Length: 113
Ligand code: DGP
Image 1 (tube, rainbow, N blue to C red):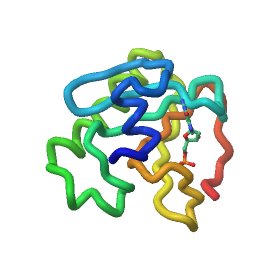
Image 2 (spheres, rainbow, N blue to C red):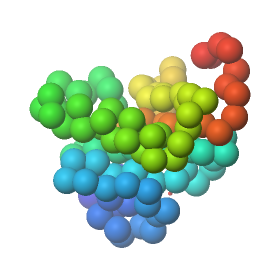
Image 3 (tube, protein in one colour):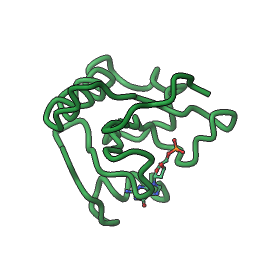
Image 4 (cartoon, protein in one colour):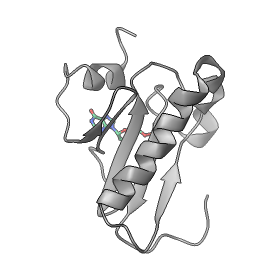
């Protein structure tokens, strides 16, 4: 996707603070962190959101969540962490490339909305 912000980050055309990369996924620190630890995990293959995961292989989907787990483990988020993927306008998704927020390093609110 030529005009996709996160595709440009994956390709290195826009700089990012990378924390992890493998063949399937790229992970980097959120530019506007909402917690002491706030990382975005994105598939290298462009899909818009969770709603389009039918366009991904099971392996590509699994790679995203395995990366979440690995990154959180490496960051020693032993108290826990929150994983969020906003999907579509009602969820206020602002970048239409599937991504998983990892939020940690503080106690989260006890409600989701
Ligand atoms: P969402 O609202 O769920 O689509 O989250 C998009 C996130 O992307 C938001 O928390 C801010 C982050 N973001 C937007 N532009 C950039 C950027 O250029 N670099 C980085 N590192 N993060 C970005």
